[in-house]
Image (cartoon, rainbow, N blue to C red):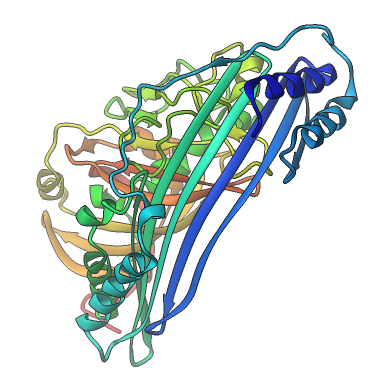
Length: 466
């Protein structure tokens, strides 16, 4: 058990290598349950612990980590990491505890639940998905996971934070097939909550939705191709905002000139209807936390306000470069990784229009009810996304379902085009990958309309079906 005095001594050694030193202690307990082909294929429970030490000297970062958490081993690591230079060797380190007013309550801790209770959640999702159509549903995969992460973060600026983070997640993937046509459906729920999460996000309902989507797409018409109006429903989640906008507002990419938003703070970069927020304080959301992985409090950061670029997402290092304050976005996958700027819960603020009104005001176009995967080039903002569930809009009404559609465009141009914003707001969860690290995030958007976007599909005769 390391005391605060031990950490002060370790940091004192580490800071001899630079002007800033930090130690990140982590203990993480996880449970994963996987179900495939109607069988529980794996139940994995385990724990890992370790510490990472970071020393900054100007623009240079030295980082090392270890599984040995005794004081002597950490002092040795601190000496190695800090060996690059010797600055301020005599300045004392004095740690002061930071507290958070953010509750993030958990009613049913996953480490206090029997494994049978967690397995029952998986079975419920699996059974519900199969019962939708036992003939056409060919494969159901359900993955449950929970994590309890205890961290201690201390640095030479006097920050001392102890925190516990609890997350639960369940995801269902369904494959349906009829003849030569194969389609998939996916649903997931997760949050910084205990098992009470699944009282509102029922596993059976996730299974049902995933299966129905896969079956719906079996009989869907092939997507039309060309330029057309696209309505992104709130329930589609904020994938586009996360990928086509959020990553470009992370300060490290901006400072490397790898973002289309570099040098544009204060400029109009989106429609006046667009306000984008990153907020790590939203209760229960998958990307929430009391403190980021540098010990800075989570906060709500306005990134774009009424179309004007206001701010970027900063960690300690990038904030220092721009002479700004960290925005609580310094995140890392584990003690084995150094922190970098990452999103938390990123969303586009709802507007005044009703979702139905937006559809009624769209004579022809495409309604996207669920986004699939995609790619974005943060340097220029170009993106390509798959549509997991889409419908034709004809004469202001939702018409036939379509499949195989892709959306191609440019993030900043799309943000400038948005001409209607709904009053709803739908969240989706995910694990965001960047620089080889994955962190839990959520993203959201209301129903929005983009007057013209390139939709990838096929050019076909009216009425032609597969």
